[in-house]
Length: 312
Ligand SMILES: C[S@@+](CC[C@H](N)C(=O)[O-])C[C@H]1O[C@@H](n2cnc3c(N)ncnc32)[C@H](O)[C@@H]1O
Image (cartoon, rainbow, N blue to C red; front, side):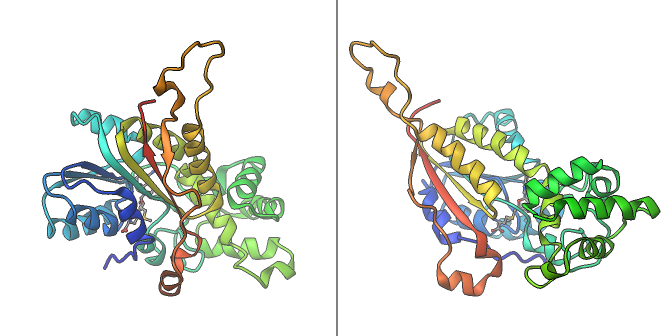
């Protein structure tokens, strides 16, 4: 059973301002919650859905085909969205959604190794066909690289202790499972830090980000999404941690600034003064109290929406 409770569903679907005859892209199909709502609103329009996780695709496909056939699922990393759509002779679209991170089943089923609460082989690949896994990172990355990713992607203050703990443990034997890693982390951090949040939370986040190159693909995908978007079309991005949100915020800011106009132009062409994107929400949108009560995953969610004003 594949169940993922969609986050900020109403807000993001409203944010897309759907034209029933438009072309839409859901870059993160997951359980198909957002895609279903988009599909229900389409008449002659079409929806392209990306996901790199085969299990998610199979489950979402069963759900979507009950609504309509006006969609295609593309099993690819969303960093390739422009190439994949161009290949299908689609050069402009009317709206693009990103609901970042992993889906609940990826976490809850445990066997994928994303969760520090479930015993599994260290894996964490969203795309099971890629070769790099959390196992390779934990067992083969040099100390300095482990330290860098745990500290940067996990924002973990004890990153050095944990990287050292991993280095020492793997000298004796390879670190195979999530619980072996949790044990090493617990032994590496000061006793007082075992009281608050789970001590492995930040390291697991870091390993997941590194395994899936999450922070590297996001800027590339957002740049391509802005290219693909037609004027008046919208991009909605839901992010789940500050590192992701910062990337989204900075790219949207870069394109929603009034361009620097060359000095000494006698009359400014009107178009030159306008930015490429307009921010629809000045303040980031967060889930309502009701949603927070019902869905624990919604806690760190942030939604940003932009509309294209003119071509890049
Ligand atoms: C939070 S879930 C999406 C949930 C979905 N919006 C729903 O309501 O059911 C994120 C999904 O995006 C996929 N994903 C994350 N990063 C991706 C990437 N770079 N390329 C393709 N799919 C990705 C994950 O495999 C996961 O299934």
